[in-house]
Structure formats: C-alpha cells, structure tokens
Length: 196
Image (cartoon, rainbow, N blue to C red; front, side, top):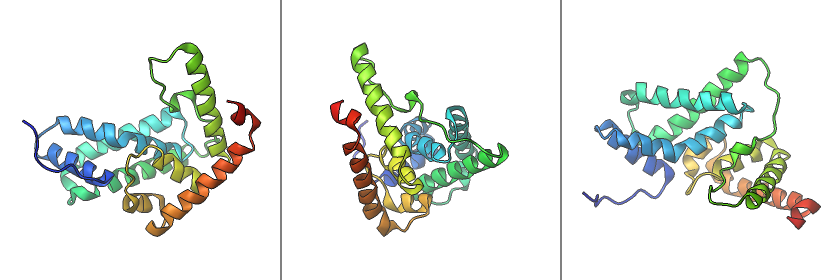
C-alpha cells in the first residue's frame, strides 16, 4: 500500500515520522530511522575525538537507549535532537572515563567508497578523501563539528543542529560559509590537492 501522506522536508521531520510509525507498531521503521540518522550520530561521536570502536559503541548505546525509552519521548519531533544530545553526552562520558583520548587521524573507513570502482579508482578516491579530512582536521573545532554533521545530512535541520552543537540557529549558515571558505583556502594552497 502506497502512503499518500507527504514526506516531511526536514531531517527532523522525516525522523519524527519514522519514529512515530515505529511507536505505532511498524518495527521496520526503526531500521529506516537508523539508516537516516546514524551518519549524523557517528560524526557527533567522532567530533568528541573518539576512536572508531568507541564511536561505534556510543552510537549503538544511543540506539539501544532510544528503543528502551521510546515511550518517554513526548514529542516525536524532538527525536532527532534527543538522539544527537544523547550521543554527545554518552561520548563525553566515554571520554571522561578514559581520562584523555588522544586526537587521531580519520580512518579510511570513515569515507564510504562505491564497491564497483576499480582498484586504481579506489586508491585515488581514498587518497583524496584522506587529504580532505586532514584539511578539515586543521580547521577550528567549531568548524570541524559543524562540517562533519552537515556533510552527512541531506537537508540539515538547523534548529536541531543549533541545539546539538550549542550554536545560535541564525549563525549556522554564516559559520558554515566561513568554515567552507577556510577549507577552500587550505585546499587551494595544497599543491597535492591541486594535482589530484
């Protein structure tokens, strides 16, 4: 049966619709919600300087917490914000427990590569992605956090992002513009980027 309900335009709207369907008994919608939101949660956890395994554990913990507490979320429109805040808090708890986590380079599996590419294309793509993430890692913390999250959202929900990143909603667009300008400037001065 094809749904005649309009598809929500924002990420938080789509997340709310999936969460509402899940709570109404359509358990397959949780899988769709996980697919939609996990990239943002992953980069929220990684923004706290967690390594691959710790970030994976934090994201899994967040999803399990949501399933356990699904009935306690009064407004489904708040589920995206709830997931991001829960991920960040759990990441902070993990970092605090580990005392001090050393910043690490982004791992090659942070960048998805289509399986149909030939080996030489995979090498070039991986090198470009690695170089790009190295440049992002040189940006100020605020830029890193913002670009990590926005890069993986189709239509970023600025209200949820503002809450999750602790920024005024009106400053997200201009901050993103300044961060992208800094990134472009870094890439323009990288001779290896120019030739790739």
